[in-house]
Image 1 (cartoon, rainbow, N blue to C red):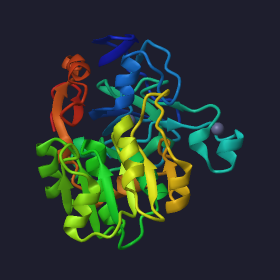
Image 2 (cartoon, rainbow, N blue to C red):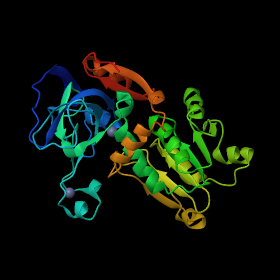
Image 3 (cartoon, rainbow, N blue to C red):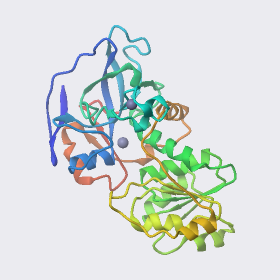
Image 4 (cartoon, rainbow, N blue to C red):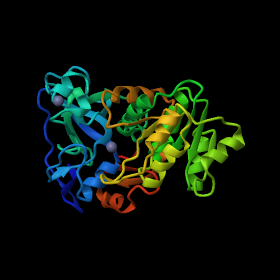
Length: 342
Ligand SMILES: [Zn+2]
Ligand SMILES: [Zn+2]
């Protein structure tokens, strides 16, 4: 099979590799689409992902495909089924796993980071990692279950109530998912702050009620203009110092701030505890996607989310290095192994 092998920072080579036949509890998947994630960018650049990476390894942890062959103990899926893969692998026996916080597993590993993943024609995973996709769901949307699962964990932690006003900062793929989830969670008004006009227009199509350019307007004025009393929840999806500070600045009294964007590890922002006190702010964050992959698959199967629009670059596996040049600046990048299209 063809596989994109990560050898060292800056080096990914597409080459022939042996297919790893499934063990008794494993399933061989013909990969149909694999999303490129910020984590792949970080690893490619030499930084650490959420789990250890020991090259040479095939990256790609956001993928879906068709079951090709199954091990003898596999009961949940059969050849021909369309499936999405939860890349997270937890030990199940450490303290965090035992108390239901598996994302903090002492021995956390992942398909596409620790083990060979989806930037290949085939990938072998444990049956436990699979969720069924309806055959009518496109593969490129099916491949978005993993980032969607991360967003769902964030949304759970943001605690949106019916009737809330939610401000999403950043209209990249994640921000555009978040605004849809905020609306599904009962927010009556969803605002998006995004400097790129094209992304603001797309956000309106995807259900945002109000969009504005944060470089020329600020959220307080926008709220005043639209008669909005306060912002109940701010979801930061950029990860820059300025936007993190905006999240604190614009969150209303008794509001909740979800810091979802990933900053550099040593990024610091000035925060006045007095303001947190005065406004009774709740500040939270969200780390990976514990137990949310199934709900993500259900949501995608339901057709209630619009995800196709978020995909900006479709790249054949042989040209995967292009993805690391584009760096997702236009939106979500999707890799398609060997001429199977979608
Ligand atoms: Zn990811
Ligand atoms: Zn564990």
